[in-house]
Length: 204
Image 1 (cartoon, rainbow, N blue to C red):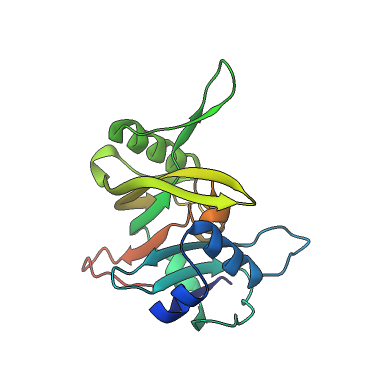
Image 2 (cartoon, rainbow, N blue to C red):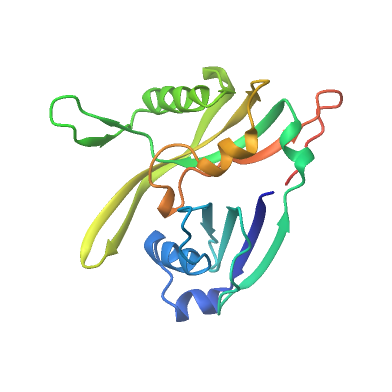
């Protein structure tokens, strides 16, 4: 059973705790999940609100420790949520490629190339996505300082629809995430199942 947790941090706390970039959020979320012998068993995503404040969403295999700041709401994702055929999705991902010559990692900044990367990544794990099923609704560099070193992660926000292959355990796929930079809020598929009979959507 997976657990979805939503954490709301008000503008005052964001300023007080100096939560200004993805690395600060990384440290906050990781403090909620002490190290496990099974490795990382959670993913998260986040949004800063225009007028201040922040929302963090976490999908995990265990319940988080309540942090000292913010408001936390957790609940189990019902088994039935994973049993639909079609879903709408949104995801912040880190589309990159490794150069054959020097094995360096480079971001995929052209929209067509980024969408092709997403389709390959999704199809590889049994999630059917086509080019005309997906669009890019955001993209930017995420900059932060980690232990005195300036870092940059290229992020693209995709939105679209997918179909699950019959033999796929969707919960297993989603908790593993899509692409790189999962420790910094990338790779979490946010899903809304679509009932085929009525096309009515349900949120987790």
